[in-house]
Length: 450
Ligand code: SF4
Image (cartoon, rainbow, N blue to C red; front, side, top):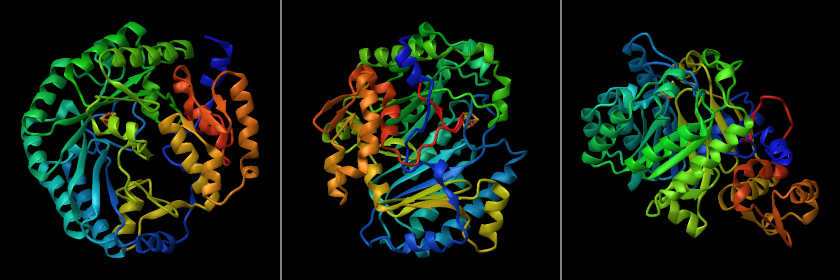
């Protein structure tokens, strides 16, 4: 690998699903700030609601999510009871009119660990207290191994219109090494069932950099994926952080591909999916040309939030459930990250929010520059700075860093406009980092660029 590319590939850089990133969150002494953000929402503000379900049937060894395997369904039922209470306690603070929830997303964990009646209790509670907007997106993450057609029918009846499958890789040897065996035929059947019950929009997640993966095996997985024709595919690099997620210790380091091979795998998947007719979107998404995300790219309206690339342009995101994050024009708020603290707070009638960050005008300006770079691969930072009331001097340090990126061939500059060439898209996080005023190089705080 070119030594210059290797230098950037090995750097730990944020994923920039927000700016400032969650690494900058601080303890919140009380819930007043968060409540003021909720009440401060304008009446016509659109809302995206996120519901976190932290349960799975079985742990995948590569998993970096906030989840656990409960010792019985009672724990999940009790969690849903607390979640409903949290929604009931939060909704009265929301300043926006009822009926403004344009996106509802169930993430996890495995949200379909919950039975259909419990999922319905949550959807109904959100609708009753906050109001789902007609024609909005209602999405859920699904584990194909535990999914049934009956569940699909129930989800369609509740109004779910998008589903995401964790696929990762179709190669059996890779699947065994990550403790997630799910044959191609099983995923194929799930796809058929979902579409047959009326849920047409399906996303797949794939991962490169897993144990036993090779360039050839990821190409084969990409072809198999395209045969199933999901509307969107997200391709992430595996981040091996066994000191942070102990199940990752079960993955043998000697089975992991090195940086050079990870880079080749990432490029090989991208080329294969493009040859299969997918359009590359942002850093890690591939979508069918008719998908709404492809249109968002054409229109310059693609967004990036805590779930990654999205067409969701809601004014605020409100998260429910343990560890969930909310985003407002004035800052971010996160609920307690352990279930006991979260549920004790809710049961005692208190807000479970414990961390967050108040953002200032300069953060907002830098957030827009970083988001446009991550989404469009081209940005005029001076124009954005001026629109936010700042002069060029505010970005002096960023332009100093850009000089090195330019001389390394990572970017092109036309006047003040920064563009990322197609063959450097995978490094866009390194380029965005030039505008990050909070960034501190701390080993293992963020994932490697490649
Ligand atoms: S099913 Fe998903 S959330 Fe659960 S352990 Fe596996 S990867 Fe993690």
